[in-house]
View (cartoon, rainbow, N blue to C red):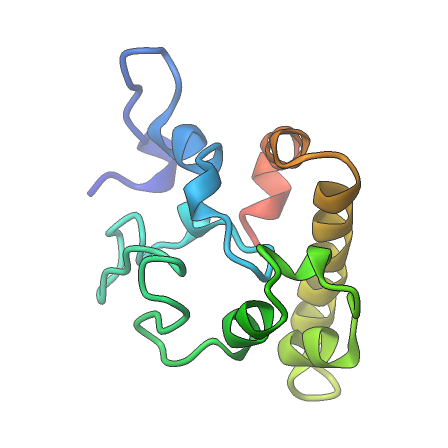
Length: 137
């Protein structure tokens, strides 16, 4: 598999990774875009076919956020009446000094709130604009 900086271009002139980012089917309830996942892109073993395909049981175990969104009948956490909740934010924080987890939680809250207020299409455009920075989350 080619490294991220050498992703192939498809017939429409769009890099494959950008096409993955723009696929609505890859938006997990937590705000993650499976198109960024090395497992989904088959650049890492085990491979994964996405959160919805696995019904919240990806290769790393059970996703309690997927279960919570399903229980609340929300397509994504941003549509839940309780969002943002302590459960959502705490899910990413982990240890008290986990700054990356805290940044992830804040980024996801912002993106999901933007998606709820605007649209999934506008959310995807925002992700596209943030592409270099957001890959780190």
